[in-house]
Image (cartoon, rainbow, N blue to C red; front, side, top):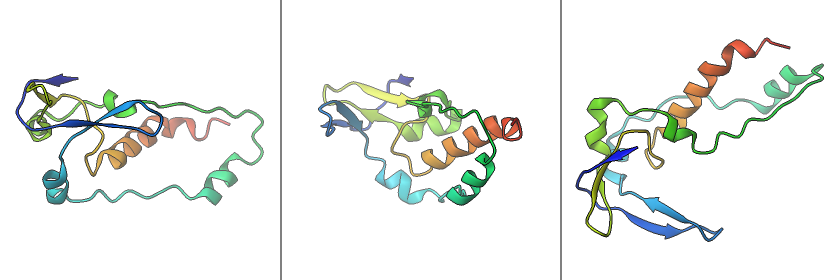
Length: 118
């Protein structure tokens, strides 16, 4: 998931008591053109589900970490830990401004064939 690199990173405690890695992607996010992805409308989703008798849910925990970074973008994700270790992300980390949109596009593309399954 990561390889050695050279930018600072640190940890913060989440409300549930677990730790989260935080990376200073401010400059990278400021230089990134925001992805234009539509947010699904609740009324359309509910309308698509009307008449269905079988429903399911899918937990996509850590889904970002399943998406490989483009080789040319890997150096842009470089971070270092407080212990001095240096790393670059090989998979899409959380914290990049377009990570949610990229993940949403991938999931939409993967599940598009199943939309008319009912």
